[in-house]
View 1: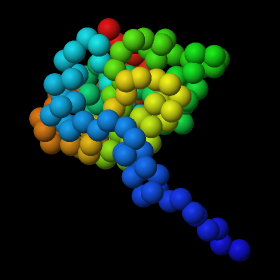
View 2: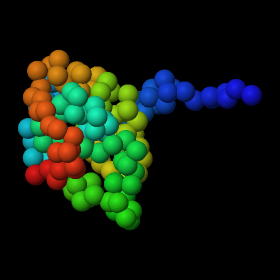
View 3: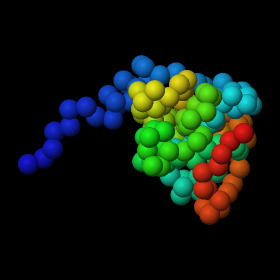
Length: 142
């Protein structure tokens, strides 16, 4: 018997966008200059290797997000325990909307995501760095 999906991705993303802060790419580019902001790249390492990333961003795949945010998790990352603003981005703005909502629901704050994701960042003239996949280990931001 085929599955019946009651809440599809369009609905989930729309719900997330209604509850989180969304920044335009130019707003995110400006925010990235601040010391109290962490940009969180939730794309897969292969995407980052292929397309590059925002310089200084913290790489956290979507699948590890909850585990790295929760201070009680054995996988918790210190970056998420800081008193900073966390701006999530993905390739096109869908996964980052879901990630920002999840982070917000967990209690991380303030959070936002970039409308249009990395593609919009690049189109707006934001800086991009290319890294080989072996250099994509999570970085601790300033």
